[in-house]
Image (cartoon, rainbow, N blue to C red; front, side, top):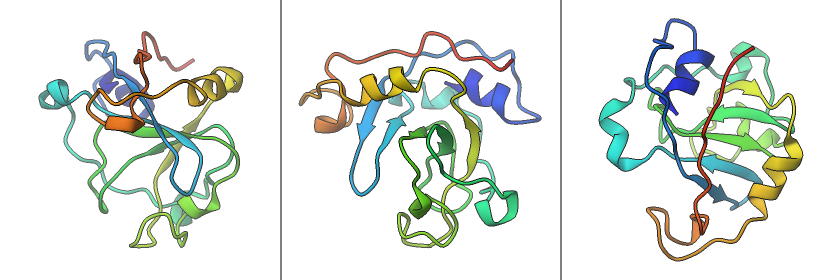
Length: 147
């Protein structure tokens, strides 16, 4: 997980050890797959990064966008989502986050949205760190890279 962010975010250490994080379904008002950081590995995370608002970057939350999860401005660390379908509520001014600042879009799925949608359709369970939002069994990220 941290390796993916290190590759995707300029100035980060791409030599970080590969991480494997459980994929979690997050489907409240919008459709995304939320990839959460393993709590046992939070000590390995980079510090929070500044929020790059879509109003400044010009990027939009369209089908296949990778977007940083956050609890407030400048709090994103290792969790992110993969957007399924266009989700303008995640952009600056959208209502998905109460502060209206949106989420930082930072990449996109270039191939394999069929796999993303199959993961979203996977069964959930009661166990795991995110309760009924955790996939059962968990699906692990084995490799993520930048061309």
